[in-house]
Amino acid sequence: MDRSFNYIISPEISEFRRFSPKLKIGVLASGKGTNFQELINLSEKGELDIDIRVLITNKDDAGCIKRAESKKIPHKIIRGKDFLQKEAFELEIVNTLIHYDVELVVMAGWMKIVTPFFINKFKNKIINIHPSLLPSYKGGSAIKDSILNGSKITGCSVHFVEEEVDSGSLIMQAALSIRNDDDIESLSKRIQMLEHKILPHSISLAGFLIRSNFMENY
Image (cartoon, rainbow, N blue to C red; front, side, top):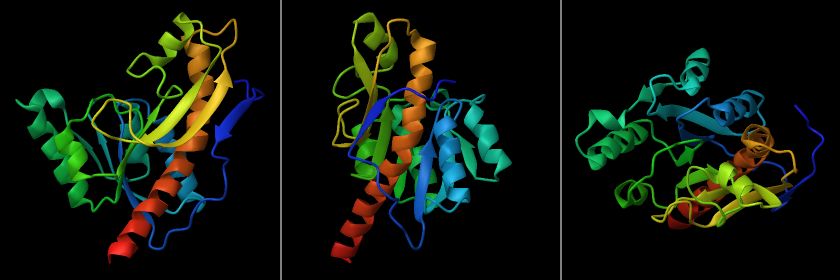
């Protein structure tokens, strides 16, 4: 894979915040789990002070499951189709996160739109990574849309989750040029590399805000 491409990250990456005790996170993922793996790697190397308490997925065959199993990270499969109402589905997720005492919820390729019920249970404690420079190209086909619309620049964004889809306060963004010969696969790979850079730092920033607010209200 070409690692020589140019990109811009804002705000500039600095050292990770230190957390003692470690920041307790829950990861929601629906796919291969490459961002999840990056978090595991940084945690194991002692670079990012996180305690991955649980992985939740809605797919029986999601690649992130094997990654969790290989590191003995608790995981739970919660399928939307098993519930008559979406609120019951989300309640199961919420109860699982509460059970594992999660401080920050990290959506890393979570392909389900969440409702106000879920958001309000973890108000200002849910972050999501999205493969575009928000507010451009919201939704599930962001990379394809950026190519079809002839955009020259795209990237990825990490933001706090609010009721409107792919909205909420931005934490960090990374931008790169779209090449003339790019297709969905090639552009996805380069965006994914940037996701691996900004998601851990966004967790660090979000965790600092959460812990700071906690101490102010203690």
